[in-house]
Length: 398
Image 1 (cartoon, helix red, strand yellow):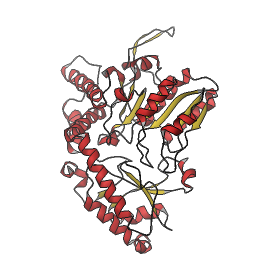
Image 2 (cartoon, helix red, strand yellow; image 1 turned 90 degrees about the vertical axis):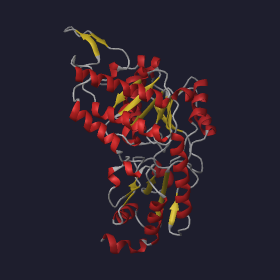
Image 3 (cartoon, helix red, strand yellow; image 1 turned 45 degrees about the vertical axis):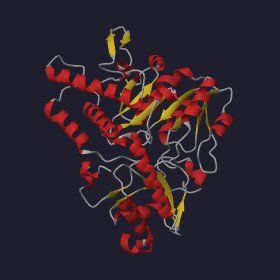
Image 4 (cartoon, helix red, strand yellow; image 1 turned 180 degrees about the vertical axis):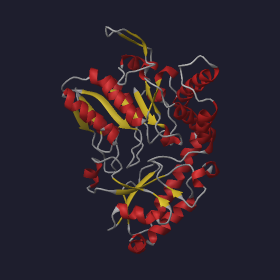
């Protein structure tokens, strides 16, 4: 699908590591280059025409994101450096002052490190408890297990919409609805869902949502945080500097700007923001429903082909996301990845920044294929053929 749009594919390459980062279409690359080449000025700093153009382009992306995820207002969109930055801002800017000793935060053992480590840090600082929603036999989250895990001290549930190892699509709308009945706030990690699902934060009623542009065919080093306006209004910045303050005096008095500007101190990644906006337009032009259907069919094909091989262990056969996690019997995952690289096939190997999940699998490392819009059935066939002949691995990699 749309392979001709991606310059990286003009070489002998099968790229199947989209969960780590996606390739960039030429229109995104051109938008970044155009900013640096034609109207490179700071945002919200100048009164001259090219600076005003930057202001317009920059704020237009905020509006574009609002429409893409169906937020109520563009002021609910804060530009960040990515999902990790967004989660840290939420944990330390909002929940640090809201949670008290003994309060509980619910996550799962399959969360990414960025949705685990900030909560661990806050637990040490505040005396709160990080607890885990049990996973079912398929390593997925069910509403039954969510309900079973909630206590009178539960104040936050923080979950990925789609996990980066199992690839399961969580029943977030159902979880959020039940959580809100109990007065619990919900944080959604959208790193793995933003380019694979049609997002509607208003319909889901999620309280906070974060993601990264580079997971959705946009630039690295930029992303956004969505929060309900009233929550953002209560949230403190974690970075202070120019642009986010209305005034400050030498006696220490500081007056901050309104949401969302108070969270965007210093010069932002303007080129990245503009590229992110172009990536959103690119996805919208294809259509999220079309993307979801194609990736689902491609995943099913891949799993069916893997199941024909006796030497493959699949860990998430029944999930419906675009991620397939597996191992080759008796071969270390990194060795498999090195072997496949000899065939110009890029996959991920290791623990995928989800180290707690190793205790669930009882293995330390796996191979991961994460599909994107430009992947093809022919590429899947090439990967499966390489795995069929993996008995030649030591000849090829040593």
